[in-house]
Amino acid sequence: MRIGVLISGRGSNLQALIEAAAKPDYPAEIALVIANQPEAAGLQRAEAIGIPTQVIDHRLFPSRVGFEAAVTDALCTAGCELVCLAGFMRVLTGDFVARWTDRLINIHPSLLPAFPGLHTHAEALATGVRITGATVHFVREQVDQGPIIGQAAVPVHDDDTADTLAARVLEAEHALYPHCVRLVADGRATVSGHRVRIAEADTRQSALLNPPLADGRS
Ligand code: GRF
Image 1 (cartoon, protein in one colour):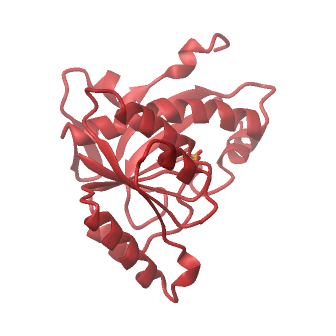
Image 2 (cartoon, protein in one colour; image 1 turned 90 degrees about the horizontal axis):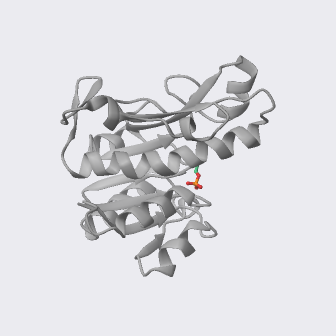
């Protein structure tokens, strides 16, 4: 399956997808990386191994609709069948989301529906949860909502700051996103109402990752 990845910055999740897609049995290839910020560091990660990139700077478009039409054009020209948001910091309109229904996925650094939006890790600490994590979900019009493909659980430590917690969650994201893209690209993750069904003998293993169990402290 040809995928397009949309980024705005660092691109560490893009890097995780690049590394996964380099494996011979991986069912997806990255056909295009689009950044809405010309200085997005993730662009260099893609260029380094010859993946086509395109900067579509939202500030050059008078309307959100015009910007999104350019994004859709680029994705279609590259033959993308699945779009992965990876730290893409623009809210998408309902029209764009509808255009890519069930072919547009996002990663968020919390166990949704807890802590949507920004400042996720600070909120997790302020709330006092003992477990947080990451979620990959199909995108719907409401930000950080939509049928959940997979989640990874991460412990919160007493001495965590938002930064240390973010780093631990990010590590889990890098395992979770390629895993979930594989499920979608294999046709094993299908939307059924508000839920995603995973066509596999043991769905407990395929939809939930638990990397913190190996971190020695939990
Ligand atoms: C990640 O934490 C992701 O979950 C969130 O934005 C961050 C992007 O990081 N949506 P990176 O650009 O992939 O390094």
